[in-house]
Length: 156
Image (tube, rainbow, N blue to C red; front, top):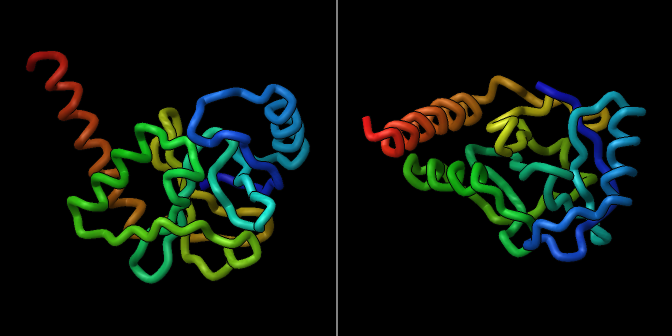
């Protein structure tokens, strides 16, 4: 797993893929100084919305939690993970997690094109499980879905 940090910031229009260079620079400096891989953005209401370049999921009591669609830039990997959850009966709560309540969750992971499904071992000083059964299942099913897609588009 990787280290993450909470970062107080929110995107003006989460549904639009627009790069705020000043914010990106500030995030990159903070990541470098903290020795972390990703920031979890915390909005003015103290809710975690998304990562600075990924989507974020929390796990608790056999359920995934992720911010509602209108609060994030929904990536293709997130969409596939949500499909896999639906196909496998994994309940998903479209609810943002309060930053000061992350210690109530068993596991947290990010999704994105490059990291695919990548667990956090820590967010700030809170330790999380990187071996949660949901993570293993989602990663396995995602790889199967990706291979099927490659086969479909390669004509094999």
